[in-house]
Amino acid sequence: MGNSWRAGLVAMVGIAALGVSGCGFKPMYATQADGSSVALTLAGIGIPEKQSRVGQLVRNALLEKIAPVGQGQNERYRLDFSVAQDEFDVSIEKNTDVNRRAYTLKSSYALIDLGSGAQILEGQTFSRVSYDRVQSEFANLQALRNAQQRAAHEVADNIQIRLGAFFSQGS
Image (tube, rainbow, N blue to C red; front, side):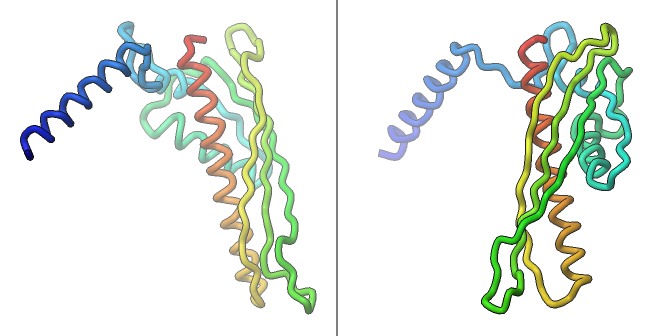
């Protein structure tokens, strides 16, 4: 019984693989026949420095994702983005102490083709994270900074995925 079960499993995996290959699926970051790839294209995106701490957190996270150390390319594109942040109370105790807050980071972005100067992609994304508040103001400040960092990484992930999807379509 064991061998027939394994043979059936192998057959099912083989059929599933044929189905995926026939649907036109291709990995987003695969290298094409001409040597191009989405990863190389992403590495050619320049991202200007930001004045705000949170803006710089998003920029650093994006650079980490799209142009890892040693993989920088000649800049063909520029990614402009802005950030806006907001906080609000999530949980308030009867004595009016706030014990939980939510932090929201919103970003609008535009991808500029440096060759033509044209804006070729634009979008918006956001992240909302929450954090606990305690009696220590130092701990609360650290919790807020941690929330900002988590939100910045999530926003950067969203932007990177959208850029990858855009370039994988052959644009």
